[in-house]
Length: 411
Image (cartoon, rainbow, N blue to C red):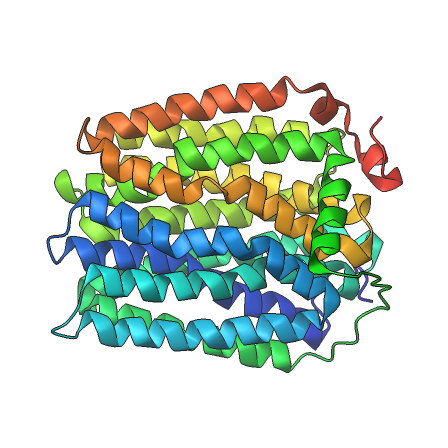
């Protein structure tokens, strides 16, 4: 296992983290490229919301299956297959959008297959982390992982927006297909010897029950997942549709500007990941949730269609705040739950958090037919503050201390 001191001096650790940066870049870019591929061919915001929901619904539905499979078999093997599959699917999307037979329904079908492959990657990577890094290095490792995710959230939307603006959605999709392919090759290059796992199970149903019991055994974990499920419904899901619609309708720069804001968010995330890996919070999840409220000004600026230059620092604060959540949340999970169930616990975490995300995307698109996209963004800001208040009022979240995480109990 890699210790904190040897994190970046080891080629396998660099491959593990670098592959995630590439994968996150592609995954962050795909919704943006799909959105503008549809908007540029005069599809409505509602159609965009439906297509994006089609890409995310299979991801949500199969997360639990992906986690169970990763706990049973080679986690690296599952991750590599997912990356290869997504490379092929993005290449197919690129060919579709330049085809004379391009249709939203065909794009949605390919997006759904992309979502299925993605469902096997996310919980697998979280499960691999405590196999590769020693316990004393987990916070630092998750800091680097969050930095890799933020790097992806920076480079992906920025390159995707520029690719659409300068070349075409097809060219952008083709580029990110290569990113997935490179990620798969990088993972295969790792000298990876997973630690022993005792996996005793009679069925997938039994596996899923075990994962659910583990999540319910920690009240702080369960309540946070529930709150973030509603955040994806009322905040994150709608904004994926409302953001591009505002950028286009208010003549704020379209795809390139939205990509720039995504890049600013990613840069803020890198800074937040570095800080979170170095600052030990006494109440990690609760305090991180307070810091995440720094995202609210960006939503307000989007709602009033402020100049892009004004929105850039606001979106950087979004990335910084949620990087603190990401680092401290994943470290808390990896130290609180048994290794043999880690991918299932991660799958329940992601599933619970994003279960309502596709509905949120449709909600964002539908809102533009009733109210303006800007009013929808204002509603998302209100929901963000209200839901954060629910989380901060939780006694179990507040009472979880760094010592409690280490011992697997709340203080």
